[in-house]
Length: 420
Image (cartoon, rainbow, N blue to C red; front, side, top):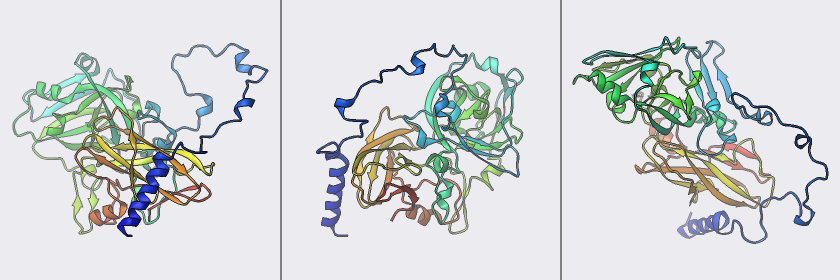
């Protein structure tokens, strides 16, 4: 494609996406002509009788029961599987506690907090144990950040694109405000021996999941989280305490934490050898891929939705995140990556947290492929699927962060595709 052609396409995109979005005869849908708008003569029944009584704990409206976590469980292993956050049905950046994604290896333990103990031992001067009551006396801080499973979006490695709604293919990631004790305080209280380079974290579930974490991360921004979005952790999210390692893959954020053992070497457990590693094209394995690289996802419009108005104004909206820092830029393409325009980033833009992006788009019934591309403040740019596979090979399962594409047909139907 010539430079002049590329430039003219970019100018057309900018005009239709931004400058001309609310100009001319185009407008957002309305219910009826303004001169016919009036309230009905009879009050609806909910205005003629007293409302429901108080409740001890609020619940979603009965009219919103379809907004749920979709469960994908292993039929051969009780309690093993995932449930997905319905990102396509949510707005803002904070994931409600009841919709935070789940990944369990052997079910959700029902832990009595009065009997739960956290042990810090190994290469320390003073092994320490803490019950929940004693931990509540420590100074706490809050941190808003995402947690993303290393297996999120792994269907992208398939030869053919999966036709699932956005949250049910890419929703093993959620964003919350976590409150707890900086791990650095507890480790320094125990006294770290100079030879300690790693910490082996173990959970109190029936799988006794354990995994190795470089001690530098625990001394940086790691939390022993006790609260999520202002309330005590829920059992499926690690009650009564869990690790939160901002920006690092989900399996390291050990739930139901019971032990931190300091060591010279990693433990080389199942979940850092046979799992959560990537087989590269040359046959070698990519291991200890801790950081979740920059990624973005258009949630609206996306598969399962439709564009009913042709022509019409639509808001392209989605989420971007990076384990390296803040999102610096999100670009949108409506032509499969031939041209790009900057989306608006909704504040506050936080470190290692969801950032919502928006862009008004005038659709006039033409075939389109919608894409988003995130850049973080380290300069890392979200790759195309072709670039990711060229770099990592075709046999991946974990750590998929390529650009995601939605096809818009002339009829307004939406499909998941791999772009041009």
